[in-house]
Amino acid sequence: MEESLPGAGGAGTMTAAAAWRNLAQLANCPMGDATGARIAAGLSSAGTATQSSLAVRNVLHEIMVDTRSDPDAGAVLTGLSELVLSLDVSILAAVIRAENDLDRHLDFVCAAGERLPVDAMVRFATAVASAFGREYPVPLQTLVERLAVRARTLPSPADREADALLRQQLVALFRSWSSRQGTHPRRETQASSRTRRRKSGRASAEADRILEMAVECNATGAGVWTALNEVVEEGGTGTVIDRIKMAPEDSATAAAVMKRIGTPQELRRLLKREPFDGAAVDALLRGLGLSAAKVMLEELVESTERLTRRYLMDRLARFGPEIRPLIEGRLRDQRWFVQRNMIALMRSAKCLADSPTVHRFVSHKDARVRRESVLWALENPATKDEILARALGDADPSVLRPSLQAARGGLPAVAVPVLARRLLDADFPPEFRVLSINLLGRSGSVLALEALLHFAQNGKTLFGKPRIAAKSPEMLAALAAIARSWPTERRAAALLAQARKTRDDDIADALRGTGIEVAA
Image 1 (cartoon, rainbow, N blue to C red):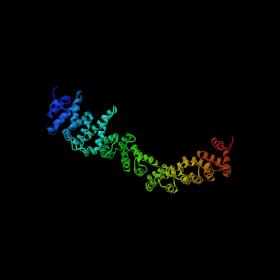
Image 2 (tube, one colour):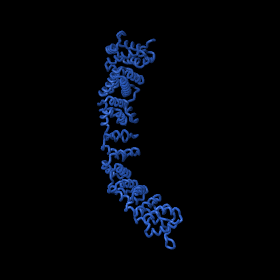
Image 3 (cartoon, rainbow, N blue to C red):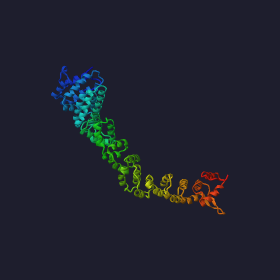
Image 4 (cartoon, one colour):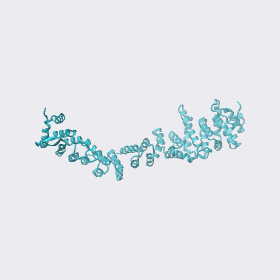
């Protein structure tokens, strides 16, 4: 096979051995003595690597990229590893930087990350960072070196896993460093990259990789915190937390990361992000305690997203009664929906209703606020009877309905005249009449009888006897209630006497249900 000249390229036409001979020629090194260290010395002493950096770079590209399918490339890669370890970093950086074609450059650095032995990869990483003016923080170097030690020393199959992880991290770093400002003409500027990240809501791959390695190796430092800040600022708190979940329980790095991001400020930022990430918020809340409640209340007041508000109501309620002072402060807000939500939160957090607060809102102009106030007050025996009596007189069905349901357990004496009057109002909701009649009947109070007679009786006959009202569900319920609770009362007894004579099966059944015998 005819050998290509240095720099000629030709993917698929160059063997690794031939490319190595070309490199030896550039270094003026006899082939019989062409070790990696000797070639490195030759390139350095003759200044070839600096003066003809593109030619050297092209030959290295042939070895790294164009000879992937060469089965005999192993020995050459071993020599190349020695070369990388022997060259001064500044010289190696000049060679790496010599390529102006971005695609060709990325092929080269990615191939290096995939094919070089571990020690040479670590050295190559330092050169790539230097080539493109990227800071290679000491903590990050430590992380990479620890992964390299694992890849060299751990027994199989863990050694293969460590090696694969190291290569994955370094390839990602090479791509990130090589795609930043100040390199090739086709490269995007750092500013535009940041703008694009903001629009996408994703931090750089480099920052993600640094965090992943930090958690993996249980290491911290300035470089890790810089990466953490970048990920968090770009909305990646959920990603950080996912990394932490994968760490061992005793990981010092995981604990330190959670301590740094577990702040009210970060909670506020996370609550405002869309889409809402409840799992990430939950992870932050575990370390914040009651200090998070103020931030959550602020967001509950201002959020326009129902899902977010529902989540916040649930998590705030878990604080229990100790959250009450914070809620009471928010009740001064005059917006009806804020007051409604705060009262509902009082109830969910098991804060006992108190008369001053309940009386303030049970007469609120907005029925939604009144309803929440009533529901809250009904759960406290100290306020239940009084508020139930007021609520049964409310004109709004949304307030009346839960009040009637609560009265099923017993209608307080103070509420009987209220419900009796309300039942006779023209605007009383028809769907609540039968239930109200039954409640009044079970009360046993004579104050309820007048209202029941209104539904059971329709005036008198010419002979002065009571006339039974037209049959309806309300009439049947009222008649049964009268028979059950007031069978001997003068007006009731006269009406029941007429009812016993009826031939109507429904009326007969209503009376039999109370134990009164009717005509056969």
